[in-house]
Image 1 (cartoon, helix red, strand yellow):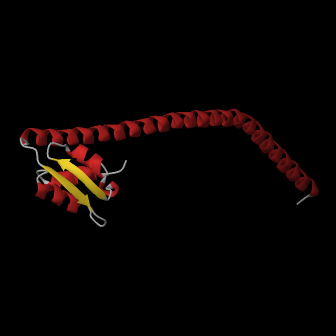
Image 2 (cartoon, rainbow, N blue to C red):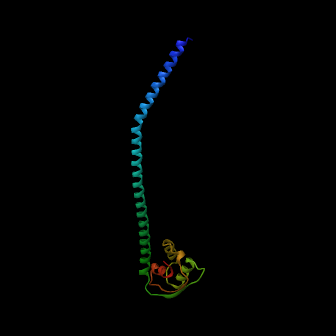
Length: 157
């Protein structure tokens, strides 16, 4: 090849490279606003995510409160079921000793006539998360007391 041909080829390659570089620079300038738009969209989505998280936390609190209310209503219905059925009052002293659990106490209460069904009282203690709060001691109880009253008397809060 001739020297002039090689020189022309080199100049052509140089010019082509320059054109590509200019095109690349102009595209970078066009991408800058889109990057700003992307950053704005990111910030907006983060703000929306924060709002959604707050709403989720509030809904979780509402759900927890509704569950507590439902448990209270169920407990109230259990207590209402018991009250009309009890006509004569039976009194007894319950002695809670070390090592006794809620089943032992429920059995003792049923055998003395303080409660009608030991399983109902065990379920109540479980539902109210009171099984681990039962205190050792002597408690004067009678059959006119509700499960809630009995539980409050034998547990610490």
